[in-house]
Image 1 (tube, rainbow, N blue to C red):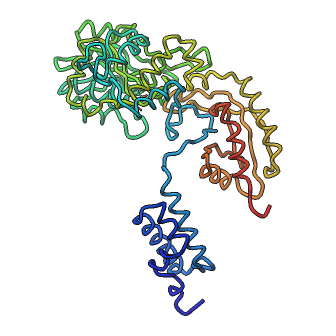
Image 2 (spheres, rainbow, N blue to C red):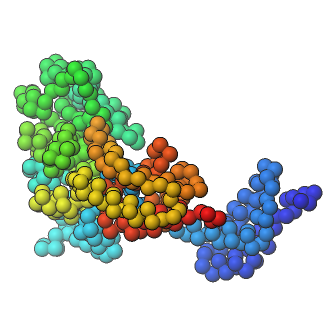
Image 3 (cartoon, rainbow, N blue to C red):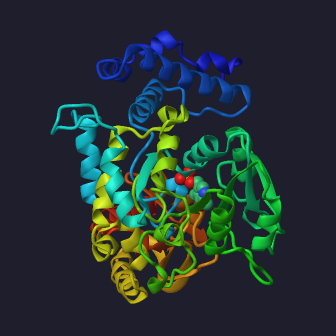
Length: 467
Ligand SMILES: *Cc1c(COP(=O)(O)O)cnc(C)c1O
């Protein structure tokens, strides 16, 4: 090493002229190439400054190769398809619901051309972008009017603003939820200009507690589904029927935040505890709110269904313009709702429902067949099929451990953490669970047609040079 190791680092201009880098300039913008060169040169300087040996890293060929690799990486979209092998169907970090093929096609067509977003083709006159989704929402909820915004958080804000600004909203202390991503009911009340009036206790709230809190400034009675937690033990909650009766008596609207938005009863599949979105309306609630991308299995959206005069008031709120859905999402939501015309068809074709409804026996068979293919890979130390449990995710069914079957994999020559990282950063990216020294693969969240590419990704990630 020379006296001054920094002299080993070539000048930026020199690197730019290296043949491989000059060649990259024909494919990448000049500024991006210059940025990549500077980043690599800086990285070398930092290594030296930290006292690390740089070995051959300053050699022109090696440096040029790293510059080109960096350029290829930044030229690729950061959002990439992921194979979800966690078994968590509504994985918020992986985009919650994957959508059915006709739904994805609807979004694709909406994206790549013009469409009658706000025009009636029959009359040529202006229409509302909400019109195409109203029928589908009315069908699944039984409500007589509906509108949609960006997500259920936005739905809550706009409902509180439009119906309860400057007024009190009565909520049970047991229902003051926080959903991931800083959605907290007390804060949402504040930003909406409504005043939270808490009643009852964490575990017991009776209908009488609501009634006692009603005063001249009461704007709404609100029930909030405790999507991501359950209060167990000695508990009592007012039922929606009781709330509706109380609302009627005092002429105060009742809002039901159902959260997960399941439109078909999932208790037959061992998934009890999520309110079906038609329940609240059937009971006489004035409005029901729910997400589009949780158990409904559609795109991100906040669906508001209920009495027509309230929906009209909400649509007149200035925030409606800020919260409105874009054309791709609207097209996807309409297509999702069409799948629900036949509930049996929805269970077969809405991927979220289909995955949740997959029987354990079927999963076990797929698991065994896939494990047999993995066993042929010489780069894996062990492959074992075992029963396990998974959670639904996405802030729903928090205490339902869904029985499932996993393939537990131990790679050769690397830790399970290193293996998981290689899988995450490969193409396609694979995200699984690491547990007890093994990498677990749950096929519930893998589509059958993805199994070949999953196998290839596992093979590639388990290859270590020198083994
Ligand atoms: C998930 C959830 C929300 C927030 O819905 P997003 O669509 O994620 O914004 C609000 N309320 C309840 C009860 C929920 O479960």
